[in-house]
Amino acid sequence: MTTTLDTAALEIRNVHKSFGAREVLKGVDLTVRPGDVIAILGPSGSGKSTLLRTINHLERPDLGYVAVHGELIGVEVRGARLHELSQRAVRHQRTRIGFVAQSFNLFPNLTARDNVAEPLVAHKRLAKPAARDRAVELLAEVGLGDRGDAYPRQLSGGQQQRVAIARAMALEPNLLLFDEPTSALDPELVGEVLSVIRRLADSGTTLVIVTHEIGFAREVADTVVFIDGGVIVEQGPPLQVLDNPQQARTREFLSKVL
Ligand code: ADP
Ligand code: MG
Image (cartoon, rainbow, N blue to C red; front, side, top):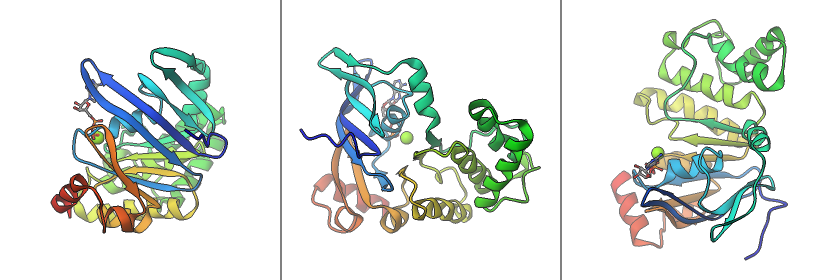
């Protein structure tokens, strides 16, 4: 088994994760190079969110390891924990990983600007005025430079999700994870969120996106990963996995969603 720890933005090796008796991840291997865009597809319950949560260190692998930019987390081989970062190191690393969930998860009592400023105050120790100035710049990058004063309830779902993306960008993450970022949106609002993600992809940010938007995956992903039953069934360039899948399970899934 070769390792690319020094060069990979993200390396997942033989990750297993169970909840009780139920094994949800059954040995996942994935290498993501800096600047890559990875689209993860798969049926409901296949382990996609659990995989993202493991990358973000919200779940600890039972076996195997996750390394983000060469920093290992939770190395365990057959029950023997070989190496583990301190809680402090894990917290630090998590500040370098952005996460955007399906539901927008904004603070309802804070304006859009203060939602984006919050991580800058909490983690970068920026003074509030400086954090707010930066927040407005970040909001402008997602097309909301003039909506900083709005509260989440005053924004559409697509706008809220764009605020959530601006917030995830605030700490300049070197890895950005999206968990079905458009599946809670009305169809007419999906495009504005996808175009923000497309711009991030073009800017060279390393992205891992769980999505059911096949057309979007085909357009922006360097690698499409199809996961089913806690294993990666197939992975490769979009033209291969989406247009010429080798595995029957992939073909069956695609025939349902396309
Ligand atoms: P997906 O995102 O692909 O729909 P998930 O990763 O959310 O799948 O879930 C995979 C399986 O793991 C599901 O059966 C789910 O019920 C189970 N699961 C996820 N998180 C937990 C948890 N914290 N406790 C128990 N079971 C869980
Ligand atoms: Mg999920």
